[in-house]
Length: 348
Picture 1 (cartoon, rainbow, N blue to C red):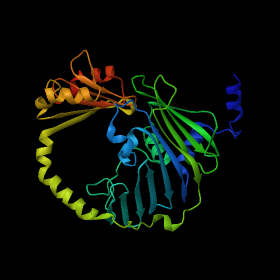
Picture 2 (picture 1 turned 90 degrees about the vertical axis):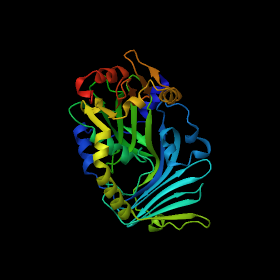
Picture 3 (picture 1 turned 135 degrees about the vertical axis):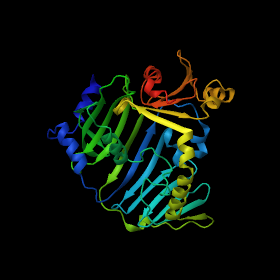
Picture 4 (picture 1 turned 90 degrees about the horizontal axis):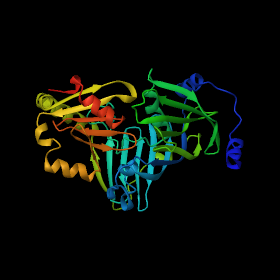
């Protein structure tokens, strides 16, 4: 009881704001610059993967599991830097105007991209990891998910990185969704996200969290965005515009074959939508194949009663059916099985 009283007493006393007001705050906030330290924690219930731990902890791909510390700098849309600190090195992504560097201190390798092709098209500067590396990125993803299937409310005020913050809570209405709620802590003064937590349904602890532990909203010095490869670094020059054109040409050449080889559809909407995939060589990839079974067992998949196997985590599940389809969604295994029996998901 005493601990609870202390926790309540520690909450900052902020003027009331409704959920609608907080949504407007997030969508209209202006970010001129910031720097700070971010802690990212991912506990998705994935099996132990050696490539994501130990001496690989400085790789950006390691963000899918465990606890990581990142330093971030932002100075307008043309200047940004993210540095992941591992036990035996660090990885940096530095963007400054037309220059983008991706540096791995452990391998002593750097990629240098020049130019700014259209984002989202083939050849754009690749992101080493699609997981959010800041509360802003995570909040942007969460806000895109808001639709009539989402209940929006306010939570308790909090202190994040020494700053007062409001809490906005997003809850999927569909009980088949694995996500129970997404909590966004919003800076009371700057109106920007300081922490985002994703909590699985039926639990109290976040499976994914990204939060500032220290933050300043002053513009960082321009020197933070200048990268000079250390001596001994192998530098690979990349031309994203050229790569984009090559990818587009290749896509045009193979678009017909790809269309014949891969079929896909999305069943459902919002939090409980399910992606269904089938390839023309599905029989070779069906779960009855010995190689497929070995791969699935290595991932810790569990058998389903309706035929097929699933790969389970706290925030998403994957169903491999015996007829060679793959269903992916942030929903329960039962929901995946239900979708698999839907004629719209047959993809014949």
